[in-house]
Image (cartoon, rainbow, N blue to C red; front, side, top):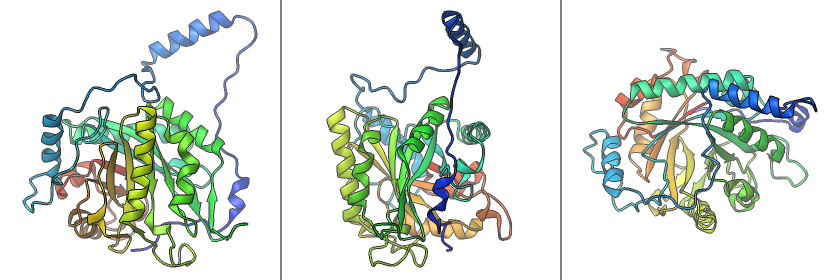
Length: 353
């Protein structure tokens, strides 16, 4: 399995971030506001509810939750799925009531994923199209769009502290939040720690994780515990690292009266996640093991079977690469229908890069 793209220079920080601005004249503000409201209504805009913390969230319907887990097990006969003895999530949980379809990337690089490759309007339109495709493939499961943004990027330059990672400026996170709001989308903040640690990086994003629409991703591929430079070999996280993150997220949820957070853990080799059976599940956090490997369909199927299906945690995810998946014969990107028919359990989180 080849590595994903790693940024080998910090020079990209000179690139221009994406901003959204609006201008109005001093006169006729009331008329302009009225016209803007009418235009939004005509366009069918929905009110923003994802970023609003409710006073209360109705408790999770356990019977419905369990039935959906069984549905997503997709006829599994191994006994691994659904995962036994998992806690019923707090009210307001997204999974498995909705399937999340996310676009992944970074605004400073067109090579790290579709999120930064296309202009914002074009990217969001393409995301909307993928959402519709998944809704058509599985009409029983509503689809929630999301933007999965790499907030800490592994790089070849050591940087001032020698950690080989670059933290994105908060203004770029703000611009992603603004884009997500227009699309009624969730936001995932993803971290590639390199020679830093998840314990050092995660707390920096607490102001954003207090928002109900913001969730988290951790990437073992670039967690270089042995001091290697990122991109030279595949990194690793232990269950203890994942438990630290889920406990931290659970604390934010309880402290701020939020619905459960989704935690994405990328994986495409066995050593990327050690002691998976020791990962602790909590009502405040929903853990997704995301099959992050690229390649031809049969290769992806094998990766999913050995490292996701056979080492069950809670939920599963599946990554599709617009370019890398079609490099080799049969030069085919799996369709939503094919993903849903091929895999047990059916992935409830889908990511496009």
